[in-house]
Length: 231
Image (cartoon, rainbow, N blue to C red; front, side, top):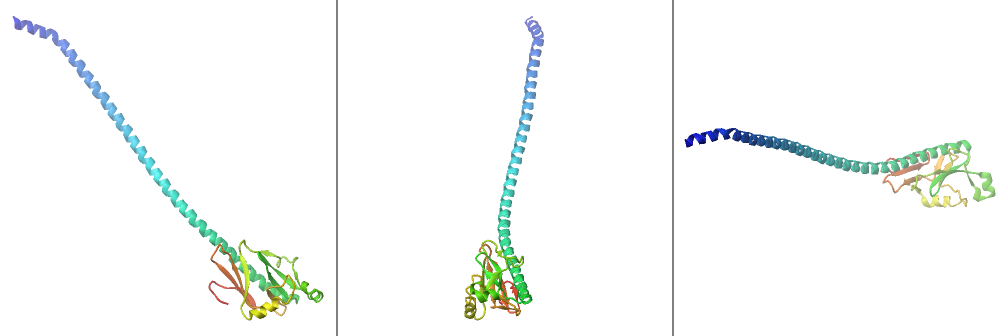
């Protein structure tokens, strides 16, 4: 009798237990699903964050490397161009002066008048001997060629030094240079008999470059000397 009562009670409570188990199972399934969603979302977020951090890190490194390379190249090119620019300007001036000296020698013959090169602190100019004025005033023995576009006053590149070294008998050359009281006394003469006096070397220097340009002055012409050459 007692067993029948217990069996009836169990049969009556079975639906309730089944409902509770189903509810618990549903809750567990929902929790598992929510956890899976959270884990998946968290994984995606972490992966995205790691990729972003990695990308940012590589970009920063690349930018820094490029900036360092550019800085080195700019510095090297700047120094190189600066030296070449001054050296090239010096070489160009030497070629110009050599050509003008040879032209002055030809002009002296054509005009039958001595022409001369006067050196100044920041440039040079050409002058002509005026025999008539020299007879009246020794100080006016030489006159400028102000109206001559070719032999006008010319300025040297900033910082450039131009000086003349006499090669033979410097004492005699110095005496000849100081024989006149003219403020335009030339350092080199292109004589009307087609020769230069005195012979020597014109030197151009600039502290901004190690390059030195030299012009050999011979009796029969002027020429730019190659590097390390001796006249």
